[in-house]
Structure formats: structure tokens, C-alpha cells
Image (cartoon, rainbow, N blue to C red):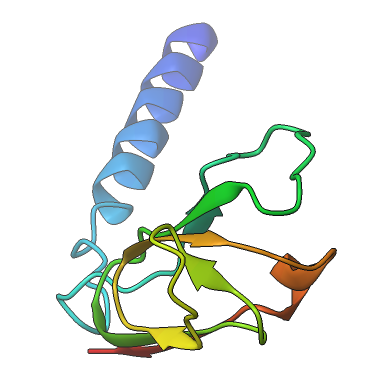
Length: 111
């Protein structure tokens, strides 16, 4: 009898815990997704970038209203035209100096 009461008490406790845990589901502060995800054509691989070779910069961020890439002096697009800034989500550039990738800036505005 005592074992039966333990099982019944355990079952009732588990059911009470289950039903009390079922509150309203979480609602995000805004219904629009907004998070940053920026990558390159190299991805996450350890590749070596060579001077005067093409690199694609990709902004896959969600909820972005506007973006502004800023490039160091001497950066060109794939057609050879000098480029200082752009607002595209995907842009291919050619760096003409070592370590110019570290001087690229991206400013984003979200909803």
C-alpha cells in the first residue's frame, strides 16, 4: 500500500509540474528578426588572401534597413574602379595593399 501511494504521489507531482510549466510561450520584443551575420567568400576556412585577388564580402544579416560598407584607399571593384563605400549586401572587391581587409567597416541600421 505504501509503495502504491508513493507512485500515485509521484505521478500527481509530475502532472502538477507539467501543467504548471505550460505558461504562455515566449514572444520576442519585436516580430521582425534582426541579427548580424557577415562573412566572406573565404568562409570560415583558413585561406590566404593574395594582393590583387578578388574577395566577396557578404552581409547575410536579417532585419537590416540600411548598410554602408567603407573601404580603405586603393580598394577597387572587380572592374578596376576605385571604391570607397557601398550599400549592397554582396560586394566583390580587390585589395591592393596587405591587410586592407582589417580596415573594412560595415555600419548597419536595423528595424
